[in-house]
Length: 502
Image (cartoon, rainbow, N blue to C red; front, side, top):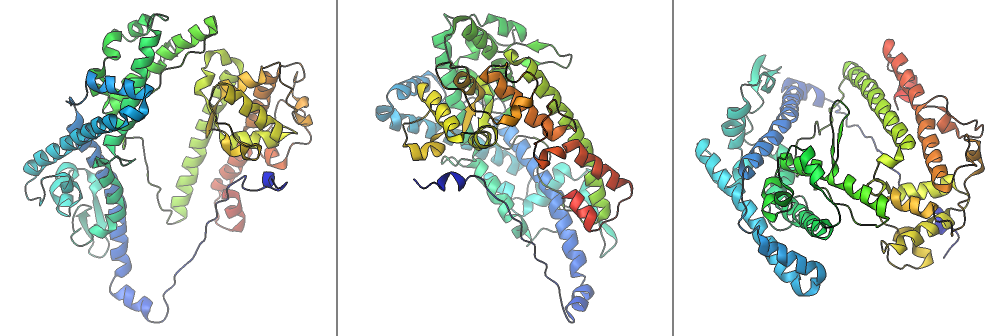
C-alpha cells in the first residue's frame, strides 16, 4: 500500500461550469420581431407552473388506486415463504421472487383499473390504461378539469395581453416533459424498478413488515408491549398490528405514518411523548443488557407529498432579494431548532436510541482525521467493534476505509469508546481546552467534541478557550446570516455582494 493512499480519494469536489450563448448580427432583430423570447418565456412559465399540478395529479391517482386495497397475494402463505427464505435463501429464493412478482403485478393492475375508470370519467382520452397520465390530451381533459378553477393556473401572455390557462396549447410541445414524464412512468412498473411504487410496497416495506412480525414473535414472551397500544387509544390491537393482512393499510403514506408512530412513538404539540415499541425494547436492553434488535420503520411511499421539490429560477434582483430574505428566516429557524435538539441530546442522551442515530462513513473519515492524531488507529478500532457484531466482513488492512458500512450507529461508536480493554483514542490537543474534558470518559469526550464542533459553526462564542481553532470556525453561521441581513437593508448587486452571498 502506498503511503499516499490515505491522502487520496478522501473528499468529493463539485464544480459548476457557466457558459452564455449570445445572438449576433441581425439574429436579435429577427428573434424580437417573431416574439420568440416572449413565446419561449410563456412556455417556460407554463412548464414550471404545470409540473406541480402534474405531481399532484399523480398523488391523487395513486391514492385513489390504492385506497382500501386488499392484495390477494398478501397472506400467511407469503409470510411462511418469507420466513423460510430468511433461514434458507438458496432453496426459497425463486419461490419468494415469484410471489413478490405476483404482488407487484397485482398493484400495477390496481393502477390500470383506476386508469380505466378515469378514461370513462374524462372522455376524449386515447388510452384506457396508465398511459392516460402521459398523453397530450391529459393537459386539457384531466389537468384542466381537475385544477382549472384555481386562479394560479391562469397567466398573462405578454404577446397577446390575454390570460391563458397553463394547461392549454401543449399539442406538439409534450417533448418539454419527456424527462419529467419518464421518471413518473417508472412509478407504475412491476419489473422491480427501484423507483416503482410496487417495488417500494413489496420488495422493501413488505419485507420490513415481515421482519417486524418475526421479531415480535421472538420478543412477545419477553416484553409486554400492551402499554404502547393503550397509548394510541386502542386504535388497533397488538395481534392485528402484527398480522400480515394489516399490511394492506400501509400501502399509502398515511398508513405508513400511523405504523411508524407505533414503532417509534410520537411527540405531541404539548411536549407529551407517547412511547413506541422501540422505546420499550430500549428499556428492556438497558435493564437486561441483552442486545435484542429494534423494530424497523417503513420507508416513505414513493412520490408522497413532502413540500416543494423544484428550485425556482432567479430572474432579477427582486427575485434574488426575496429568496435571500426567505433564506435568512428559514436558516435562523432551522439553526435554532438544530441547536435546541442537539443541546437536549448532549444533556439527556439516555432519552435517545443511539442505535437508530447514524453517522455516514464520510463523517467517520472526517472525524478520524480532524479529531484524532491517529486516524488509522481510530478506524481500525471502530472496524474491530463492528466486526464483533458481524456488521462488517473480514477485509485486508489496506481496504479498511472502504470496508466500513455506509452508515454507522452512534451506539456502536459508544460501545467502542467504552471498551476499557482497548487503547485510548488520541484526541487532538486543542480539544483538551474544552471544560472538564480530561475528566470525562472516552464516549463523553467524543460527545463534547461533537458539541464543540457543531456550536463552533453556529455560535460566535464557544464554550472552549481554543485559540488555535481554524479560521473557518471563527466565522460563525450567525455571523454569515448577519452579513446577508445587512446586505439586504441596502442591496446593490456588485462583486462584494456576490462574495457575501456565495
